[in-house]
Length: 169
Image (cartoon, rainbow, N blue to C red; front, side, top):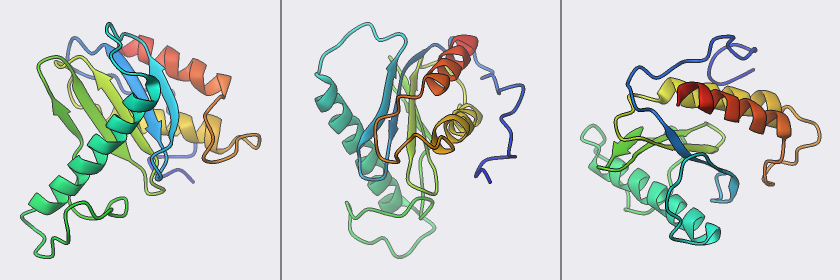
């Protein structure tokens, strides 16, 4: 059973409503911070080596999750800043925007983190990330040849992901 929706991939994937929704990059991390997948579609400048880039991205997510939990006005028990939280626990964030990009984020109950970097004018991508998660479940998680925690090398998943990203670009 899938976490977000039915047992089949939706025949008509969600399309973001805003204009200028070019996808630049995508990361998929496991709960331990291992980058399982990194894809680029439109990244004009490479400033770091891939390992540094992955560490910085995971560190950013960890810090933002801790900060949002600490700033949560509805929870009196804040805990210590930097203590990892379980997926779905406490306050969470979905995206942030700079003048050059928008980062959209979704974490599954199993701790898999999906990060999509897009054009800053892109609208809400939560449904898009749920659709990509469903692709992940169908083509990766259900694949008997895939070992959890290893790099995602499934061509069917990569092809479906590339086709979907091209359709929203």
